[in-house]
Image 1 (cartoon, rainbow, N blue to C red):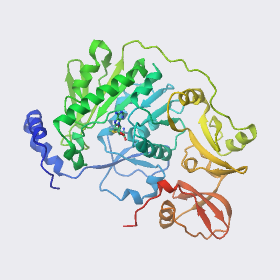
Image 2 (image 1 turned 60 degrees about the vertical axis):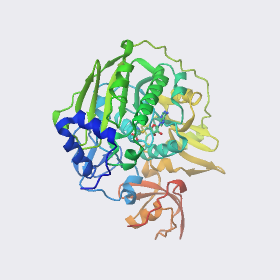
Image 3 (image 1 turned 30 degrees about the horizontal axis):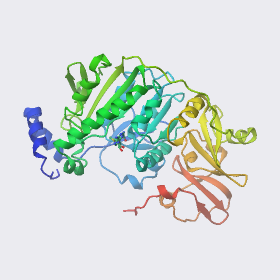
Length: 453
Ligand code: SAM
């Protein structure tokens, strides 16, 4: 048990009224430790351990919180640390959408990347994810987490929601995990409690409506909107949903969730949503609702203006050997950077390049320097990398941590040239072997800054 600072008065009164006899259990749950959970990356090797989170195929509870920063598998993108309730996104998507189709999916408020990495594990490789974050510094963290996850069918953008109005009717699915007052995070993040006020709840609710009305024209007629927050109050949840459903613009789609999950169904007018309370669900507070757009929307035409320079045939043939033979990819050259994109998505990504501020697209493979290819870090983490094409070095745990700190370290290895460094089954990045020493090519901005304890 931990001591919780006292709850904001208005919040406490509201919850007491709402929860009735359940209020004491709610209060008690806030004094317990948060459950620890991760979501495994099914496209990368891992040894699944821990109790399965019943609503998420690859979600696991851990019995204690390890020092995640000191686990090389985290930096290899073998799993993502994510609280369990927010993994309900999986049920929202699989119960509303035909995932065998090639879809265009937008995750509008995406940093640091929990929902986006989850979406990448659920959609097929002919589907495109646009993972957007309006705050520039946060879009860099988002891009890092996306690169670690290793998929190429994704674009990371840094745009304001209103910029998406240029993409009328473009998306089949939109996930809006809205910035909110964070009432569901009080246990995990006492800072959220310090910032809470009734005025802030009002402000968040208005901001959410602004975000929704800015971006909704970009959802296709018949498209799916998944709206979520990590807060409990009506203004940011039910009231925004009933506001959205005015004039019959959306149909709410019910989710089938076993009662043992502890998730509460919320109904207000036509609006249906699902709420997780920390005393009823093994996770933090969360709210989610799934809707289908009914109003007709024109569809933006993808104009095939050519914006990319493609790598020469000779270079493309060389790069094709770096990836699995069955992967159908194009190779583009941007400044000195060689990037690979799925052929099936090239036209859409080229179109988006003209409409959005793109931070990263596809997977960066190599930098061209004096006719030589310097392999890119993102490519070491790619699920499309053909490992057997490269020299490999297996590291001990100590060496892997030295590598991730970007320290100089020695190997008893007199080979020369670029080599993929691995810890257990996972690739961590590149080194340049120089006979009796090596250059550590781990990206400076990503290096871990923590000691061993
Ligand atoms: N979906 C993320 C995940 O699962 O990791 C968490 C998203 S967090 C709840 C909300 C995000 O919305 C934050 O990254 C925040 O920077 C962003 N945001 C803040 N103000 C915004 C605005 N006016 N429009 C769009 N996004 C905003």
